[in-house]
Image 1 (cartoon, rainbow, N blue to C red):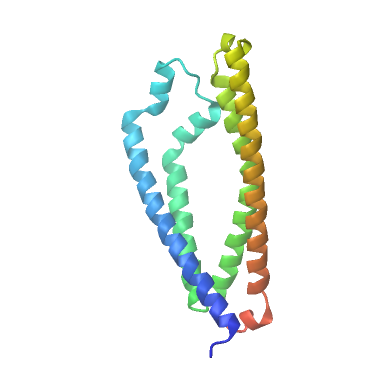
Image 2 (spheres, helix red, strand yellow; image 1 turned 30 degrees about the vertical axis):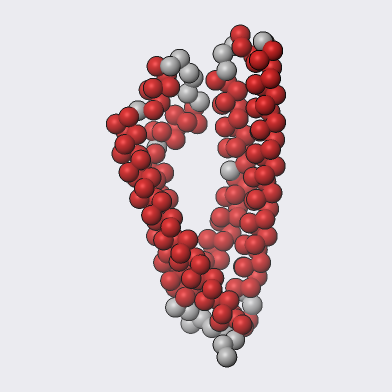
Length: 181
């Protein structure tokens, strides 16, 4: 019978390999979308419609290729450390722990982006519209959606931080560390 520590490492590594593979596939799909959007110019279309394009959206569009390539590289790195974890290499265990911590912190770092997205949505509303009854209703809906999104994103970040913290603690236990070389 296999020790519980070995089973834990195997399951964790295999699930991470699966997630890394899916992330690589998603990144490749995004590269295709970046190539298509480069030809379609959705920001130009928004501007032609008279809609303001928030600075964050402009920045993301200007750096879409770099951001997608960065995501692809991070996905390949996750694939490598997950393989190292499965093969019981110490560098794989340490690399995996680093990924867990970075992702937990990044989840909290995205909360201001969620808030900024709703601020950008609010800025798209025409100036006179905001003073009308329909405009007031739209603003109220945006505010309610903002708080719902922030609370759910915050709860998700807390849940993932708890899960990642638990995984880090398990990966640092003596019985797990003894499996690695």
